[in-house]
Image (cartoon, rainbow, N blue to C red; front, side, top):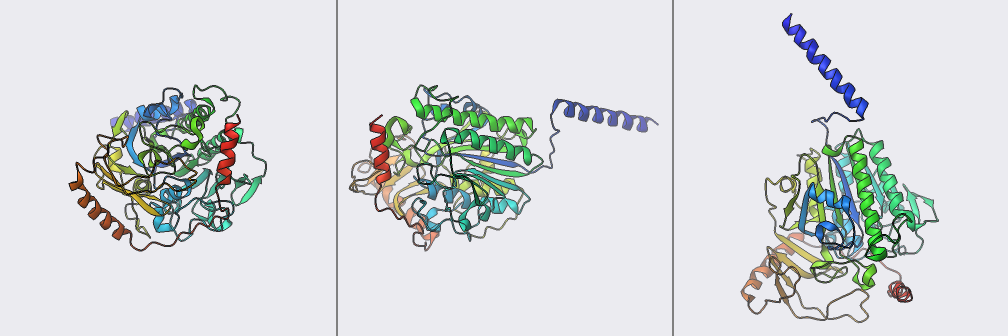
Length: 465
């Protein structure tokens, strides 16, 4: 009798707890639920453009909360200093050089990310995940290259950069709107993201939210225009911060916060040629379109309440290539077999502070060529000539440069003469790394325009303001 009475009491308590959860809108956490993933990618956002990385003239309270409640990487690298190669590297976990994607795609391009490549979305779908891409795609706009053919169940967004001709909103494989008011692009992407979360709150799901901004031309909705101390660029970042807050709010409302890993980062550094409308990479050197640190070292915050220790910081090297194997591991696919060689590594144990990342090397590619190489704290930059009429901000021509990034993150002190004995080891490691890559395909991207007149026109427009 006592045993039966005890069971009745326990049952009553469980029912009362469930009733309370329902009445308050909360959902009981299930240890058996698979981890959800939300990956938020900004476009051309600099290292110094959000509060956790030193911005004092742009308010980013929601991004600040991600950092204070999660893990901030200070040495996180993108696959490329420009858009398309980075996105290809992110989704495949592979150097863009392996894919033949050395440049950005244009509306005139005939090619895109090969359907033979396996993306994060395709891998997670094998584990029962709903997959959604919202925002900028920029990996080919012909049907065979669009998100729905690359593992995503749903897609809404602009298929290439917002400064290119013929900006449209696609829904799946079809144009939904030929008239896009970019003042509301960030807001629209956010609303679509919240809808996706609510639609798939029973999980598991993978949401890839790729903002079109702060890539120029810059637009902010009326609620954010003129509100930042850093002009329109700051307005745009503050609206993106609002967007982050809305996404996290949706996760909290659905009772998914502790079961969702949120990552916030950028595809490359700031486009400094546009001055105050181009962001800041301080204290890093240079920005987008270069293989100096400002071009490829970006903010990266991982937020996962109850799993990642709040307010932690990691100063070791980490790569965007790591996202694919990490998400696959956390999805529970312990025996997943990668079809193609992966250049990242599973850093799930790094996120929880249980281990360090094993690899300490990174090859800096630009336009398909190796411009620099990092191993440990050392970075060697190979000789460069100043190309004529270079449309991106670039340093003057230089000979070989050698920096210790642990003590000189701004790449100001070339220590080649004093530390020349370091160079042979770096070159040997680079040779081994390139041998590991093996034979790579020729560039896929074909661009019809023969010049960068669209950049010149924007610069002229900016100067007339």
